[in-house]
Length: 141
Image 1 (cartoon, rainbow, N blue to C red):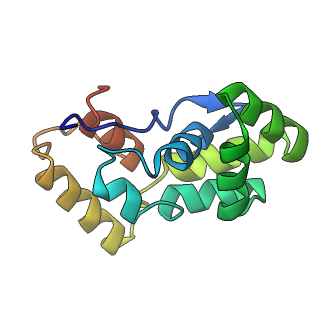
Image 2 (cartoon, rainbow, N blue to C red):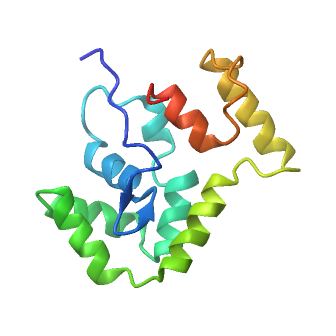
Image 3 (cartoon, rainbow, N blue to C red):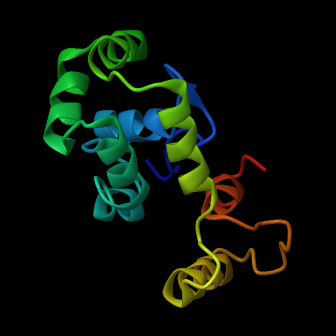
């Protein structure tokens, strides 16, 4: 298979959580052919790690839940029943994700610039965050 399979957009929500669906997709597809190496190398790290920490779920726990579930709906039900966070806590997490790269974080801003260059998106001045970049790189915007 030569077509790249992308995770869902970080903007999609599950039980009020943004980025949860990306972690779910990555958990479900880690062994699927066509999964780009960038996703396997960073699996459980970066934004995945931020969501897992905010939700109070371990990486191993999420993988097991996904393995035992037949549908995204079953995973959503598990998240709803087991991850007890307020809408305000979910919003704080999402604002943290949306703020990346943070102003003054030279390493993150350099990585953001490099990622745009590597993807042929350096001309896209509308891309201000990693979430914007992810959606553009994965051909959603």
